[in-house]
Amino acid sequence: MATMDLTIQTALANEARRTELKQKVAKMQGLVEAQANLATLLSSNCGDSQRRLQSAQNELTALEGGAGPGITDDFGYKADILAAFIAAAQAAGLVTDSTLIANLQSLAAGTYAAPTASATQ
Image (cartoon, rainbow, N blue to C red; front, side, top):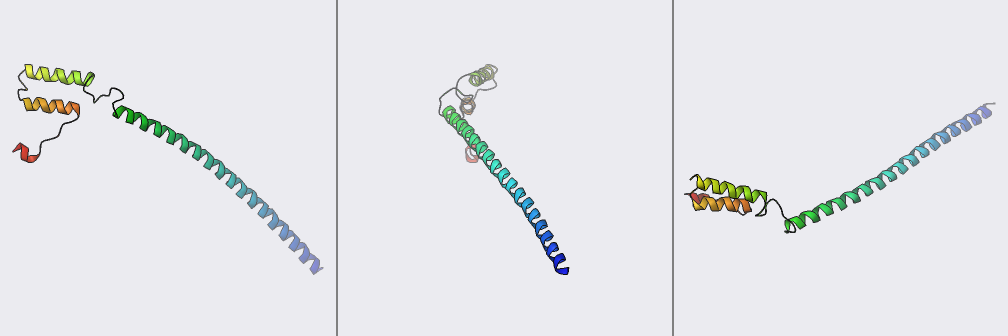
């Protein structure tokens, strides 16, 4: 009888372990599938982001290359305001130094270089 009880106990233990392992395998298969889906989604998003980045870089390169008017170009709204400011300052006698006018113009054009300490002494 003891041998029968031991056989039954072993069979029940094996069945319990088999059930436990089946659950573990199913859980791991679900995790692997979820990770594969996530990797696919991230790869797709990464590709989309790279395409948007490349498009923005191409547009920036085109604008910086002079393919179209920009705010730093020497025409348009900014240039008109600077020209009006310089004309008003000259008319009011506030700006009489041609160097200051040249510096304002180079600042507007984006080519201004600040004077060095030795140049100001």
